Length: 397
Ligand code: DHB
Image (cartoon, rainbow, N blue to C red):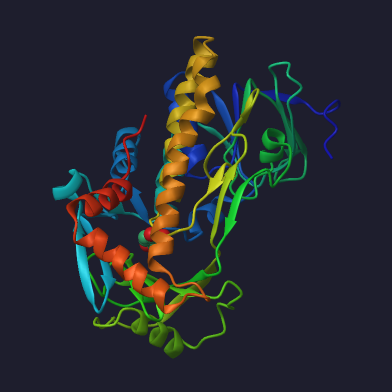
């Protein structure tokens, strides 16, 4: 434990725990409002830039990146996608976003977003520290919460701030200060996971394919002309190293009947667990949570990073009002405003998940009902529009 009495205390206005998309964008928006911050993360820069995560940016997220970062590669390395294919009954059913809602999404993987954001913030002189272990956040109600921990070299670190933000992911160390415990939330588990691969092969499709098949779910996504990302439904206890490449391809091919996937060497494998979680509280006094620290969604529909960024847009505005204008109204309303969107995204992610996956105990009735649900979506403009609106993202604050 850090002895806060003998360690030199550093001062900042906002201490941000976590240098993911949420923490980095928050530091930028605060700097625009003239509010200084210190961002700390337990990982190294290399780890942050190399962790493979999801890849879809809502229209508003892409627009925000372009506004804050003239050097963003969202339009050069990333690609605009104007639709997705819902695949069932042996054929694809395209949902065309621009004609339904006038918006699109961008396929631009999170680690590329992070490379851009780290370069942007470091280039702007942001105080950003890697390899920092946060051991404690203390908020005694004095208006000066403290963050205590260890620097990368093991020396003690104490930050005295006007506000602390937990942007430190699903295993947040800040969350217990806000919710009273590390669980402290609404929670749901799913009886399946995704087996994810990166492979060296040409794209199998120009757009993402979300498939409901008698064998279960598959998602055919892309990364570049040479590298593709694909997922299929598996048991949550599956060992990513267990199946041979041939078995993985067989599983994928069987889940998109009627297409032929371009196969190639599998260069990475992982198993992604599914959870839905919303913390009971998003703020307590001068400590708030954003992103995965506050909520987790299952990956179907790719809402995670977009939702984190939507939290941050609200919180930045609230912190500007609080710290520059001494107006507490927006910070008092932060949790309710953020939760309105969070529960919509929870519903959408749950809905896409339950419409497309099969549960181990699913009956024939359940499968046929799912096909009826899918037809209700693709054969109705209202159904397609709901999906397109949610997928491309509701307006930001
Ligand atoms: C990707 C991941 C998702 O969860 C999703 O819904 C779409 C795309 C991806 O990694 O490409």
